[in-house]
Amino acid sequence: MKPSVVETKISQLVPDDLNANKGTQYGNHLIEKSFRELGAGRSILLDKNNQIIAGNKSTEAAASIGIEDIIIVETDGTKLVAVKRTDIDLNTKTGRELALADNSTSKANLDWDHNAIAQIQQNWDVDLDDWGVMLPELKPDDPEEEAKKEISTKLIVECGEVMKLSELFSELQDRGFTCKLKE
Image (cartoon, rainbow, N blue to C red; front, side):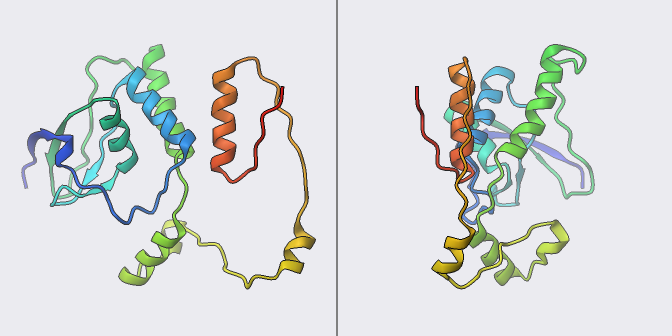
């Protein structure tokens, strides 16, 4: 199959209604920041019906900052598709920053939706071990056992930069920590 290129509107894409990644507030912040400051740097993946397989959070962030157009490269998966940024040299501040942003946003925005994963596993017999995805073991509720395990610790963070502190605060909350601000 010879790849073809189609231009359309981002609004024509269909989000995955069973996306296994809930994303995080901090990760979404980083993706939006990356789009605003560095532009688009990576492709997303669509099925034959324009439903998003990978890149739901990137698509949401792009749309939220006003990116309306999308270029779709139609292929059958036998060739790797590359996005070439003609305005960036890797060995510049922008190039290196975009490389860091690409890796950090993926890590910061991953929060598995265990219900969606269980449904995917059940409906399509997907072996989660093949992909390194692990669901937490569901244990019967035992309040006495939980009380024995509870440990209370505090972390004090001093930071003169409000934005960095705000990002850390959001990330910790997204990861399930109880956070309080004190002066």
